[in-house]
Image (cartoon, rainbow, N blue to C red; front, side, top):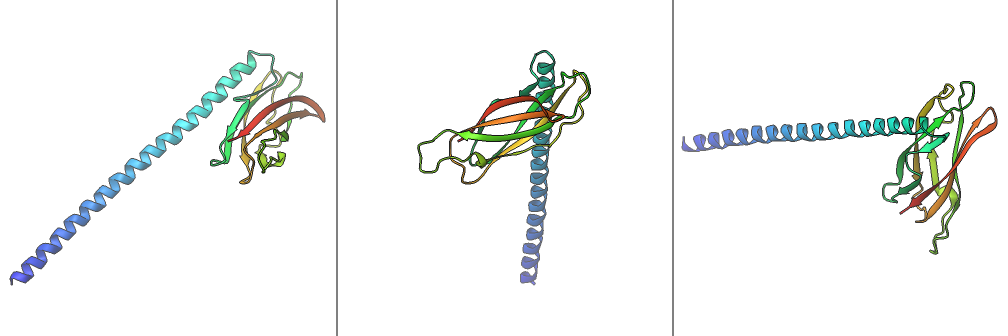
Length: 177
Protein backbone atom coordinates (compact mmCIF):
# COMPACT_ATOMS: atom_id res chain seq x y z
CA UNK A 1 0.00 0.00 0.00
CA UNK A 2 2.95 2.33 0.61
CA UNK A 3 4.12 1.95 -2.99
CA UNK A 4 0.70 2.95 -4.32
CA UNK A 5 0.67 6.12 -2.20
CA UNK A 6 4.17 7.11 -3.23
CA UNK A 7 3.42 6.55 -6.92
CA UNK A 8 0.20 8.55 -6.53
CA UNK A 9 2.18 11.31 -4.83
CA UNK A 10 4.69 11.37 -7.74
CA UNK A 11 1.81 11.54 -10.24
CA UNK A 12 0.23 14.50 -8.41
CA UNK A 13 3.61 16.30 -8.33
CA UNK A 14 4.12 15.66 -12.05
CA UNK A 15 0.67 17.09 -12.84
CA UNK A 16 1.35 20.19 -10.72
CA UNK A 17 4.73 20.73 -12.44
CA UNK A 18 3.09 20.27 -15.84
CA UNK A 19 0.35 22.82 -15.04
CA UNK A 20 2.94 25.34 -13.80
CA UNK A 21 5.07 24.83 -16.95
CA UNK A 22 2.06 25.38 -19.25
CA UNK A 23 1.06 28.51 -17.31
CA UNK A 24 4.57 29.99 -17.52
CA UNK A 25 4.78 29.13 -21.22
CA UNK A 26 1.43 30.88 -21.84
CA UNK A 27 2.57 33.98 -19.95
CA UNK A 28 5.85 34.02 -21.91
CA UNK A 29 4.05 33.77 -25.25
CA UNK A 30 1.64 36.57 -24.27
CA UNK A 31 4.56 38.79 -23.24
CA UNK A 32 6.42 38.22 -26.52
CA UNK A 33 3.27 38.80 -28.59
CA UNK A 34 2.62 42.11 -26.80
CA UNK A 35 6.24 43.18 -27.22
CA UNK A 36 6.30 42.49 -30.98
CA UNK A 37 2.80 43.91 -31.47
CA UNK A 38 3.82 47.27 -30.01
CA UNK A 39 7.02 47.27 -32.08
CA UNK A 40 5.02 46.84 -35.28
CA UNK A 41 2.71 49.68 -34.28
CA UNK A 42 5.73 51.90 -33.50
CA UNK A 43 7.25 51.18 -36.93
CA UNK A 44 3.97 52.10 -38.65
CA UNK A 45 3.85 55.33 -36.63
CA UNK A 46 7.44 56.18 -37.63
CA UNK A 47 6.54 55.60 -41.30
CA UNK A 48 3.56 57.95 -40.96
CA UNK A 49 5.73 60.60 -39.28
CA UNK A 50 8.27 60.39 -42.13
CA UNK A 51 5.49 60.80 -44.69
CA UNK A 52 3.97 63.76 -42.85
CA UNK A 53 7.36 65.47 -42.55
CA UNK A 54 8.17 64.89 -46.23
CA UNK A 55 4.82 66.32 -47.34
CA UNK A 56 5.41 69.41 -45.23
CA UNK A 57 8.99 69.81 -46.50
CA UNK A 58 7.94 69.51 -50.16
CA UNK A 59 5.06 71.96 -49.80
CA UNK A 60 7.44 74.55 -48.30
CA UNK A 61 10.22 74.09 -50.85
CA UNK A 62 10.79 74.47 -54.57
CA UNK A 63 11.72 70.78 -54.91
CA UNK A 64 9.60 68.44 -56.99
CA UNK A 65 11.18 65.22 -55.68
CA UNK A 66 12.62 64.46 -52.25
CA UNK A 67 13.99 61.38 -50.49
CA UNK A 68 13.83 60.77 -46.76
CA UNK A 69 17.58 60.03 -47.10
CA UNK A 70 19.86 60.57 -50.06
CA UNK A 71 22.97 58.66 -49.04
CA UNK A 72 21.46 55.24 -48.47
CA UNK A 73 23.42 52.60 -46.53
CA UNK A 74 22.54 48.91 -46.86
CA UNK A 75 24.23 46.15 -44.93
CA UNK A 76 25.01 43.00 -46.89
CA UNK A 77 23.59 41.03 -43.99
CA UNK A 78 20.15 42.70 -44.11
CA UNK A 79 20.16 42.85 -47.94
CA UNK A 80 17.28 45.36 -48.18
CA UNK A 81 16.07 48.72 -47.03
CA UNK A 82 12.85 50.69 -47.29
CA UNK A 83 13.04 54.34 -48.29
CA UNK A 84 10.40 56.97 -48.94
CA UNK A 85 10.27 59.56 -51.66
CA UNK A 86 7.86 62.44 -52.11
CA UNK A 87 6.60 63.89 -55.39
CA UNK A 88 5.10 67.38 -55.78
CA UNK A 89 2.98 68.11 -58.85
CA UNK A 90 3.80 71.63 -60.07
CA UNK A 91 1.89 71.17 -63.33
CA UNK A 92 -1.49 72.79 -64.04
CA UNK A 93 -3.37 69.49 -64.28
CA UNK A 94 -3.67 66.35 -62.19
CA UNK A 95 -0.89 63.91 -63.11
CA UNK A 96 0.04 60.30 -62.69
CA UNK A 97 3.83 60.06 -63.02
CA UNK A 98 5.75 57.03 -64.27
CA UNK A 99 8.54 56.06 -61.83
CA UNK A 100 11.85 54.54 -62.93
CA UNK A 101 14.68 53.75 -60.54
CA UNK A 102 18.03 52.17 -61.26
CA UNK A 103 21.78 52.32 -60.79
CA UNK A 104 24.18 53.10 -63.60
CA UNK A 105 27.65 53.29 -62.07
CA UNK A 106 29.72 52.16 -59.09
CA UNK A 107 33.00 53.07 -57.43
CA UNK A 108 35.94 50.75 -58.00
CA UNK A 109 36.37 49.16 -54.60
CA UNK A 110 39.88 47.94 -55.37
CA UNK A 111 38.93 44.40 -54.44
CA UNK A 112 38.82 41.34 -56.66
CA UNK A 113 35.00 41.46 -56.73
CA UNK A 114 34.07 44.76 -58.33
CA UNK A 115 30.52 45.96 -58.32
CA UNK A 116 27.92 45.70 -61.01
CA UNK A 117 25.16 48.29 -61.30
CA UNK A 118 22.62 45.46 -61.53
CA UNK A 119 23.58 44.30 -58.00
CA UNK A 120 21.14 46.91 -56.65
CA UNK A 121 17.45 46.21 -57.30
CA UNK A 122 14.45 48.48 -56.75
CA UNK A 123 10.88 47.51 -55.97
CA UNK A 124 8.56 50.46 -56.54
CA UNK A 125 5.15 51.04 -58.04
CA UNK A 126 5.39 51.77 -61.75
CA UNK A 127 3.16 54.84 -61.45
CA UNK A 128 2.30 57.30 -58.73
CA UNK A 129 -1.28 57.78 -57.69
CA UNK A 130 -2.92 60.72 -59.48
CA UNK A 131 -1.57 63.90 -57.87
CA UNK A 132 -3.62 67.10 -58.03
CA UNK A 133 -1.92 70.41 -59.00
CA UNK A 134 0.32 71.55 -56.13
CA UNK A 135 -0.43 68.25 -54.38
CA UNK A 136 2.16 65.97 -52.80
CA UNK A 137 2.28 62.17 -52.65
CA UNK A 138 4.77 60.08 -50.64
CA UNK A 139 5.66 56.60 -51.89
CA UNK A 140 7.79 53.75 -50.60
CA UNK A 141 10.56 51.97 -52.48
CA UNK A 142 12.40 48.85 -51.35
CA UNK A 143 16.06 48.63 -52.28
CA UNK A 144 17.62 45.18 -52.21
CA UNK A 145 21.09 43.91 -53.07
CA UNK A 146 22.15 40.61 -54.58
CA UNK A 147 24.02 38.21 -52.26
CA UNK A 148 27.28 38.64 -54.19
CA UNK A 149 27.09 42.45 -54.40
CA UNK A 150 30.42 44.17 -53.91
CA UNK A 151 30.96 46.37 -50.88
CA UNK A 152 31.07 49.74 -52.62
CA UNK A 153 28.97 52.80 -53.50
CA UNK A 154 26.57 52.83 -56.44
CA UNK A 155 25.38 55.91 -58.34
CA UNK A 156 21.63 55.62 -58.87
CA UNK A 157 18.83 57.74 -60.29
CA UNK A 158 15.09 58.13 -60.09
CA UNK A 159 13.19 59.57 -63.04
CA UNK A 160 9.60 60.75 -63.05
CA UNK A 161 7.93 60.98 -66.45
CA UNK A 162 4.68 62.72 -67.31
CA UNK A 163 3.12 61.97 -70.70
CA UNK A 164 6.47 60.71 -72.10
CA UNK A 165 8.28 63.88 -70.97
CA UNK A 166 10.79 63.87 -68.12
CA UNK A 167 9.25 65.73 -65.20
CA UNK A 168 12.10 65.34 -62.69
CA UNK A 169 15.31 63.36 -62.23
CA UNK A 170 17.33 62.98 -59.05
CA UNK A 171 20.61 61.18 -58.41
CA UNK A 172 21.40 59.42 -55.16
CA UNK A 173 24.01 57.07 -53.70
CA UNK A 174 23.47 53.52 -52.42
CA UNK A 175 26.38 52.24 -50.35
CA UNK A 176 26.67 48.55 -49.51
CA UNK A 177 28.56 47.87 -46.29
